Length: 149
Image (cartoon, rainbow, N blue to C red):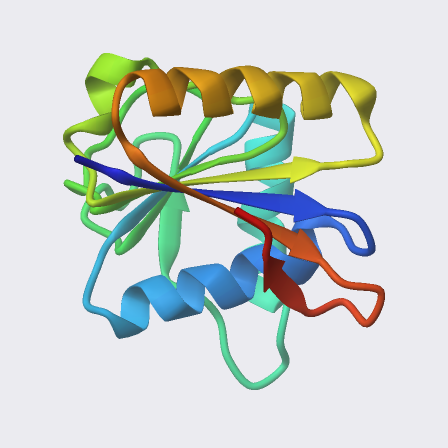
């Protein structure tokens, strides 16, 4: 079964946490696909990941170029890099049947957005019903991740 992690943002934005999670993914020797809710969001993330830190960048690609890169950015279901980890952001969805092709799925959602919170709850129920291992992480007041369930 696929391990599914839920990251409930309360203090920061996606751009504050995604690079660190991608770095940890690559450190494990895994590849990732980041599925965003829109093409505009993919383009924004594409630009951000080249410049988020002055001394480094995350090797990535999108829109049909560099399909072998360790991080693939998309707004649909393509996975040309044979990713081990699926990141869902900005309302992007995944079918339960597709999760088994990943070692891990990470849903990052904004807890200050009622629709995103409801979508996360629905996805949690689907994940549990499908017998995937699920863990829930929430940001503390200090911005650290704390395991809640």
